[in-house]
Structures are given as C-alpha cells and as structure tokens.
Amino acid sequence: MIDFKKEEVTKKNKSLWEIIIIVLVAIVCVNYLITLCNKLEYASLAAVIVLTASIVTCSLLITKLLSSYVYVLLQGSLIFEKKIGSKSKTLLKIKLQDIDFIKPYKEIKDTKNIVLNKFIIRGVKNTIYYVQFTENNKKCGVIFQPTDSFISAIEKKMRSEKEKKLTEI
Image (cartoon, rainbow, N blue to C red; front, side, top):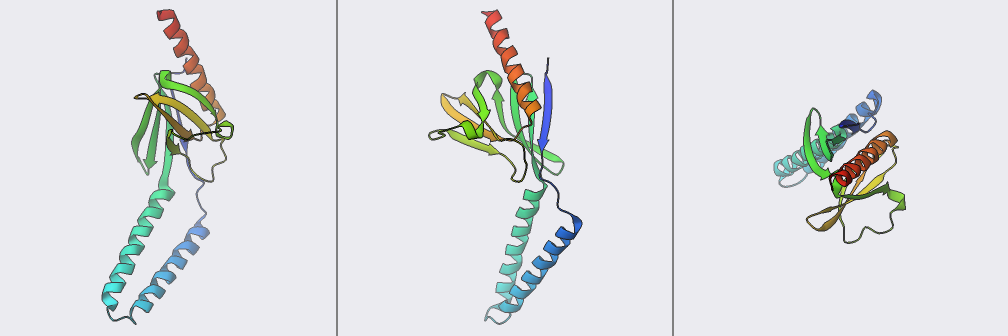
C-alpha cells in the first residue's frame, strides 16, 4: 500500500544564452530609463523610483522562475506545497475522505460558487486535473498538474480508505 508519494512540478530551465540576453536587455532598459529621468526636474527622485521598481520586478521574476509546486500523498492526506529554492511552505492539506472526485480539468463544466486554488506552472505538459472537496461545509476545488502515476496512487489510496471505512462500520 502506498503511504507516501511525492511529486514536484517545475518549469523547464532557460538556457544560459537566453538568461544572458534577458539580463543585458534589462540593464539597457534600466539605463535608458535613468537617462530619461536625468532630464526631469527631480532627476534623483525619479532615478530612485526607477531603481526601486526594477529591484521589485526582478525579485518577483526570480521568485516566479525559482518556484515549483510539490504534491505529497501522505497517510490519507493530499498536501500541496510551494517550493522556492530549498524552502517549502505547505499551502493546502486535504484529507482523502473529504475529496468528492478527481477529474481532468477539461471535463469540468462549472466551477462557480466554488473556492478555487491553482497549483499549476505554465509551460509544463502534464495533464491538468481538478479535485473537488468539502471543507467546513463549503465546496472547494484545486487545479493541479500531477503525472498519471500520481493520480493512480491517489485513486488507489482513496479506494483503500473507503474500504477501510466500510469495514469499520
């Protein structure tokens, strides 16, 4: 029986020459904006604003490029984590007994009035799945990108949990 299964979804890394071109274009753009700011009356203030905006934008882009999602099947729970570098943070934990169904997302017709969580990374070719579950008498949904083997493990564990529950009654 599967008590633990872990899967990480990451975006394909860019090649070195793509990163070099992106960095050079960014440096040229920031330099051009600072040059334009020098013609303004408050040039130093404008330059500080441009630099601050550049730093914030770079940090957001780096965070997005380095982040990945980790899906964990552990002892009757489905756990979703976000990993940035070597640090991970648990975003959501669902008990398998609370799951109503798991289907490919393209089969889902309506997600209105459902609290929706998205744990997907663009550019990854895995099939996108939808999990609907009940939490505090509210219908909730999760969109995520597991492999077929991970879906099989979830379904197998859900069946064993239901059988276990039936034998207890």
